[in-house]
Image (cartoon, rainbow, N blue to C red):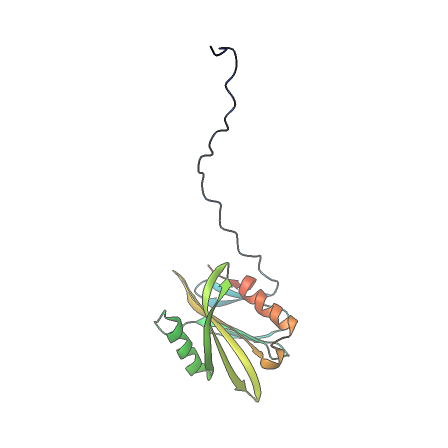
Length: 167
């Protein structure tokens, strides 16, 4: 007969499913000047860039020919290929390929282009940012000669990881 005074073996209680952990917050914004590109979206332009802004269109360039630009999407389409074709046509670019880049922790459609401006061959990457309250695009452009340049790569990484502030 079992001993009534003996305690039953301890059984670990089954964990009850709790709330899902919160999504990680986007990385802290990089330092620089915040510029509105409309609809609640801001770009953080790094130090050393000359900034021109008009009607929610922001274009910033540094002395090495690296360019950051942002502004509203002008056509009604959400199709990445149509957006890329339009962007190529109005900006005199040659469309190369579609890809995705992480912006604020979310993979977003991006188009890669090439062109020659003032005799300089450039690579141009444009990301469509379409959300419930915003429809904007952000572009990063650099001379082909800086394609393997680490500081230029860091500017692009910082722009897409921390330099685009969505509402």
